Amino acid sequence: MANLTVTIGNESFDNPIWVASGTFGYGTEAPELVDVNQLGAIVTKSITRQPREGNPPPRIVESPSGMINSIGLANIGVEKYIKELLPIYEGLSTKIIMNIAGIDIQEYVEIMEMVESVSSVIAGYEINISCPNVKKGGMEFGVDCEMTAKLTEKLRGITERLIIMKLSPNVSDIVSIGLSAEKAGADAVSAINTVVGMSINAKTEMSDIYTTYGGLSGPAIKPIGLAAVHKLYKKLGIPIIGIGGIVTGEDAAEYMLAGATAVQVGTANFRHPGITENIIDSLNTLLNDSNRSFSSELIGKVRTHS
Amino acid sequence: MIIERARINSNRQLAHQIWEMQFEAPQIATAYKGSGQFINILARDDWNHPLRRPMSIASAEGGCVSIIYKLFGGMTKVLSKKISGETVELLGPLGNTFSNWNNGSYPILIGGGVGLAPMLNLKQACEHNKIDHTIIIGARSGNEHFIDHDPTKNIYLTTDDGSIGEKGTVMGPLEGLIKENTNAVLYACGPEPMLKAVKEFAMKNNMNAQLSVESYMGCGIGLCQGCVIQRKNSEIQSHSYHEKYSLVCMDGPVYQATEVDFG
Image 1 (cartoon, rainbow over the protein chains, first blue to last red):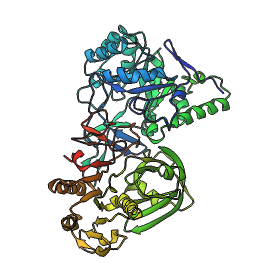
Image 2 (image 1 turned 90 degrees about the horizontal axis):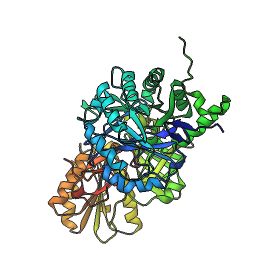
Image 3 (image 1 turned 90 degrees about the vertical axis):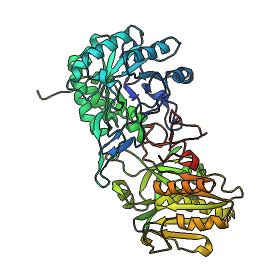
Image 4 (image 1 turned 135 degrees about the horizontal axis):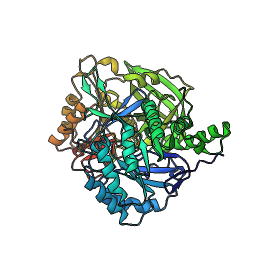
């Protein structure tokens, strides 16, 4: 068995295989199908200050090797999260990363202050500055270096826990956004969020998603994710958490070779809620086969032609 | 909920574009709670089609589970090419069930298109429990039907083109039937226009109706929040995080007609 431990900031994770926000609920949904304690971390579904009903249906549609979603940040709100979920997380041995989303800096601040004011075991926060599916939402932070820096800096003043800024691929230069987050004190960045996409039914001549555009995820976006992670790795000093189309241990290894310290499994959970167990096993096998003792040896080790 | 690799026992065409597949799925068959529940099928092991497909359970007995499916789109075509002995991965049984059909009322079962799968299942349950009932099955044309129109046995078929049974929709026979059965309760599964008509009919006639609704589904277990319908006046516990919507996979697929808002 290889050593899969990874360290981000002052937190150490048993393995680099996490589940992505919005693809695993709050970690309590499918106990029969997955042992959450074997995960490196659970990134819980985006939480906003108030509960959100989300977008009208249709919210999802399959696309070649992927799916498009526009859930619209439906969530239970921070108060319920604190009251009902934080106590449950006390009993888990896996790490919890709380994903938060807001419509302005004040909302992010308020949510984080509320969580910081109670005692909890959460390891850190992933800051959603890149949801493509809400009209007025995090996206305006995610496409603007200055706003990203301002938000990161503000949140850095509130918590000593991990701050992971989740980056959008729907920008002209993801590296500059990542650098802004790093300079402003983020412990890590995660990349990528979903890619803006559209699906049309030629027979009915209708768009398949209520909000017209949604976020494309799944194996279809893996090459986009790999390139983003590799570009970020070349310029940033902080760890990068790779996301986008990971369904096998090999996919996870590819992201690590591109520069990811850890990865998040997303859409694959919808098909196999327990798929992360297979991914951890196959990553282990892959490391053993290549005589590596530590998964961290893979980080950024991709060889390029030029 | 169970994930089970199931062996296909049979896969046969019943009518035009309508197929039936039976699996050996002892764990799911044992866990099965009743008509209305569904399984989420993974027909291919590659990732070209990442999502499972939800299919209503048409029967569950003797360690076997069957579905009735209609050919449309790539995945159902893949299913139709499967032969006995091959395996597919099933997730289930999922969802809730039709209820109170055995409490002394007169069940009228209404199925449209492949929505007849849970209705055949409920019919079987009624027969098993010696409960008088009627079934109405609607289709566009006679070639989509695979059982016989026989009002003497309380089996009514309808077709849009009149080629088999009564011409028109399922609402035709229904109008006549409720005059004879004042304690009727409606159970329906089918396309949204049909469910909408059944709902309006039930409300107008002050009748109880339970509808099994269709929805585009991602995971089937509440993770993706994709399969919502708008609901109202509902007392059911909601898995959708908000009272405006209900998750068909977890809260449904069966709803009281009054709970569903078709907009």
